[in-house]
Structure formats: C-alpha cells, structure tokens
Length: 447
Image (tube, rainbow, N blue to C red; front, side):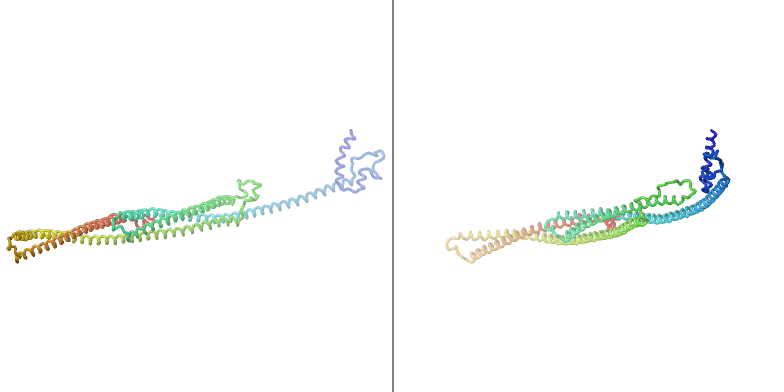
C-alpha cells in the first residue's frame, strides 16, 4: 500500500520531467537505466521519487524560461490587442463617418429628385386643371352649336312652306345649307378635339400618378435614410441584423436609379408640353369656329335682308299693278256698260227705221216707189245694223278684256299673298328665330 502511494505520488513529477528538455545521460540516470546508477543492488528494479540536483536546476530554469516566454508572448499579445482595438476603433469611426457622409449625399440626391418630381407633379396638376377647363369650354361650345343648327334646319323647313313661284333655291337657301354643313363639320371637329383632350388628360393623370409613386418611394427612402443618418454607436435603438448586408437580387444601381426617375420626368415633361400645345390648339379651334359661325350667320342674315328687300319691292310693284288693274277693271266695266247702253240706244232708232220701212212697204200700186226716203231708210237701217254689230263686237272685246283683267287681278292678288307669306316666313319666322343666335363668347365656350 505504501509502495502504491509512492508510485502515485511520483507519477506527476515524472510527467513534468518528461516535458523538460534534459540531456540524454541525465535522463537515463533519472530512470536508473544507465551503466552507473546511484542506487545499490538492493534497489535494483525500483524507481525513486527524488530528483537529482541538476534535474532540479533544470526544472527551475525551465520554469523561468517558460514564465518569461509566456509573459513576453502575453505582453506582445496585449500590445497587439491594444493596437488592434485602436485601429478597429478608428476604422469603425472612419467607416461610420464615411457611411454617414454617403447617406447624407444620398439624402441630397434623393431630395433633389424628390423636389423635381414634386415640381413635375405640381405642373401636371396645374396643366391638367387648365386642360380640364379647356375641355369644358369645348363641351360648352359643342352645346352652343346645337342652337345654330336648330335655327338653320328650322329656317330651311320653314322656307319649304313657301308657295309657288316663291319656292325657289335662292341665295338665302344656299347660305343656309352652307351654314348647316359648317355647323356639322364644326361639331365633328369639336367632338374630335374633346376626345383628344380627354386622352391627354388621361395621359397627364397617368404620368402624374407615376411621378407621385416615384415621389412617394423617394419620400419613404428619404425618411429611412434620414433615420439611418442619425444613428451612432451610442444609440440605444440600434440592433444586430446579421443577414442585412446581403444584397438583394432586385436591387438597382445608382445609374438605373437615376435613369428611372429621369425617364419618368422626361415622359411627364413630354406630356406636359403636349398638353400645353393641345390647349393652344383648343384656343385656336374655338376662336376659329366661333368666328366662322358668326361670319356665316352674318352672311345668312345679309342674304335674308336682301331677299326680304326683293320681296318687298316685288310685292310693292304687284300692289301698284293691282291698283292699276282695279282701276282699269272699273273703267272697263264702265265702258262695257256704256257699250250696252249704246246698243240699247240703237234699238229704238232701228225699230223706227224698220217700222217705217215696213209701213211704206204697204203703199199701194205705183205709190210703192223707190224714192229718196226709201233709199235713206234702207241706208239708215244698214248703218244702224253696222253700228250695232260694231258695238256688239266692242262689247265682246270689252267683256273679254274685263275677264282678262279679272284673271290678272286674281293672279296679282295671289302673287301678293305669296309674297306676303314669303315675307312672313323669312322675316317673322326665320329672322326672328335667328335673333336668338349665340354670341361669339358662347360659341367660344366662355359662357
């Protein structure tokens, strides 16, 4: 038992000696395996727990050397650690400052593009409002053309109720047809322009929405980068995110990022310029159409005025001819009455002459003589018959003339009635209706 304790107590010392670099000879003596051992024959085959003095000094020297080496390495490691700590601290500070500066520059770029997008959105909103106002002008102008078209068609329909011979395709009808055709063409032009304006408004709103979405993204990005710029090492709100440094595959580059916004701005600016040009076109269209309609309206009114003057002149002349015809009818009636009276007046002398001749034809024998009285009575009867024949012929002529005068009177009265009807249609119906023709401001869409 004691031997076992000695062996257990001796084992760590042996292990320590094995770690030291001893001369081979000393090592052999320590193990009692050499030719010259310090123990006698009685201790042969047993190991001792004691070391040699040289071994003890070697062990101490080894301890000193190991402690010195460990201290030297430790001091060097501390120095390197302190240097590394200082370098990493400075590097971390510099990289954080550089990152903060980069984030600040990014904030400036984002703010610049955000401001440009905001400016473009404001311009598109203002331009869209102006174009909406122009579209409303076009719609009001289109509504205003309904009145002139109704007036023109109503004038044409009213003038269809003229009677012959006034039912003619005169200058007024030609101008009215031109006016109706002009209004139809203007209505088609206004409808096409309204469709263009609606399409441009849609494009303006689409690009405004695109710019607003881009602006919203940049506003969110600006808020994120502004928050990131405020972070620092002593901030208590920062946390670890180990996998946040991994780049997303869908991430853009600074070039594509700037080009995306530039393309949005260019498209928006292109639509803005197109909208400005369309507004100018709308102004020209409305101004030209309003002027064309008013000029054509004036031309129609002028034609109506001239036609009414012609009808007034013709009706005046017809009325004068009717007065003269009536006077002539009166005179002719008096003439016919005089002829009838003359014929009647000739009947008594004729009866006298015939009675004389009849009575003298009863003279007896030789008394039935062809004397001067007989010849005169015969000639008187002939003269009276000739006169009666002539008077009857004149009476027939007078009656025929009177009949012709009556027909002329009826024709003149009918023609005067036709002219009066035409004047009523043109002046009371058509021109009175044309007094409600829209003004230039209404036709231009301002009212």
